[in-house]
Image (cartoon, rainbow, N blue to C red; front, top):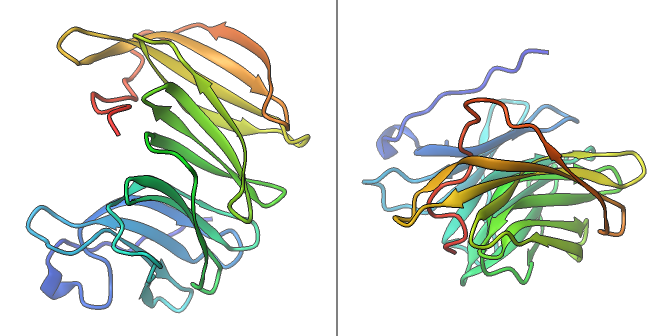
Length: 232
C-alpha cells in the first residue's frame, strides 16, 4: 500500500487550518489510514508544539490537549489496532503519555513519574498498551504502560560513565519483548562517541530481564544518541 503524505511549509500565513513547522513524528492509523503528526514551531514562530490529525476526507484537525501548552513533544508516535494514537510530551518538567481516540478525542494525559528521558521508540502492545524506550540520565530506559496510562514495569540499564540507550525493540506474541541497547563512551568534552558495545536484552511479560547477550558491531555504525541524552 502506498501512502501519500501532505507537504507543508513553516509560513504561518499559508498554514491556516493545517500544521506548519517541523514534523517531529508521524504515524498512520491501521484502521482508517488517517495520519497523525507532531510538529514543532520553526525558529521564528511563536506558537507551541502541536498534534494534528488528518482524517480520511483530507481535513486537518488540531488536537487540543488538556494542560497545554506542552513544553515539547518527544519525536515518537504510535497507532494501535483500534485506531487510537499515543504520544509523549513534557508538561511541568514531567513526561506525560497522551492517548487520543480514533475520532480525535483525548482519552487521557497521564504523568509517568519520569523526569529525565529521551525517547527513541513508542510501540503499541497487542493487549492495548504501549512500550516506550530510549535513554535517561540513569542510562537505557524502557517502560510498559497499559491502555489506562498505568506504568506496569520499568527497566534501567546503567552503564555510567558510559552512555546507554535502548534504540530498537520488537514484541513477541507471549507479551515478552526484545530490546537493543547501544552503549557509547562519553568523551571529556561531552561529545558522545560511536557505538562501543551493543546488547540484546530479552524481557518477559512482567518486565524481568531473562537474557542478555552481546551483538557484533557493524563497521561505521551510526550514532543514535546525542550530547543532550540524559540531560533532561
